[in-house]
Image 1 (tube, rainbow, N blue to C red):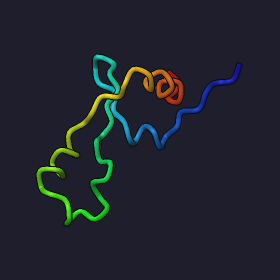
Image 2 (image 1 turned 90 degrees about the vertical axis):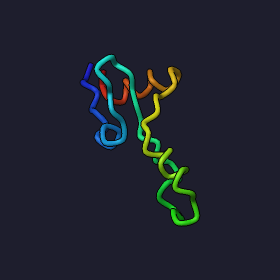
Image 3 (image 1 turned 90 degrees about the horizontal axis):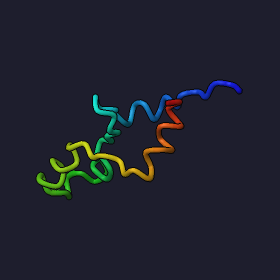
Length: 65
């Protein structure tokens, strides 16, 4: 069976913690029309968010792990 290639674009968007959790940066909707959003809303998007367990299995397969 051939090796699964790692999806490099996915590696740039997520981070795997030391305990194995997959975190994504919460930058959704933070770039487009930024000046209309409050500073509080923009700050909220800087905090990383843990992916749900249902998506985690498919993400690990894309990473070849």
